[in-house]
Length: 299
Image 1 (cartoon, rainbow, N blue to C red):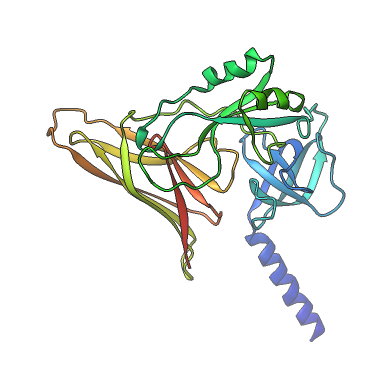
Image 2: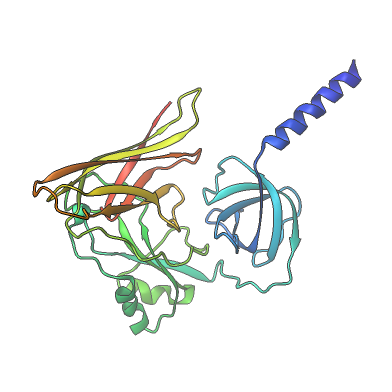
């Protein structure tokens, strides 16, 4: 009887282990935004992983390869959680970024409904450079706050720059703010944004996460955009890379213009986006329509 129980237990454990998604990667270890957390950006895919080690941890600034299984969302709230089963230290030099740099930012001048005038990353960077500050990395991002949907209202869009921590005081004197938890290395600079037009107006946008029992967790986004004539199409796609805040999903708004003659009538175009995911999002940002939408959860 005991032998049978042992065999059944081993079978269940084996089945459970095989059902977990296996993950492997390599890169340089960095300290996470929360105490005790360790993150790594895979050098091949650019994916950010939150690594949990069961035994002795390698030091921050160490290059490793790792194998493990995907875990649940942790208190670290950075990247995909991985329970590391084994790792190997690589003979590769890493820049020990954590603790020596910080991300500073300013709002980029855009407002909801396409209002405001955007200040380009390169243009704003000149402020830092003119003050003798070396910019190590830069990216478009969001401040992580939620805003009511009001045309002309704040949208949280920022220009973010990684600089040496010793230059933080200089940046603050220029009016920049420090990004909380920014002593982890950000992703590379975002690709050029495909902004449909300066006067693109989208509204009635909602976002909700369906977590109803019996169905796969799925994030849904839908809304409407208005155009001066017929024939336009609107599509949403996940921005690559994402921003610094893993709880904000950034979606690119792609507008396809009519290819031929169309009716010169103001037209409303609906759009929708769905993604199967267990990740928890607080908000969805539509880049190109300059909107930030809180995510509701249905259970």
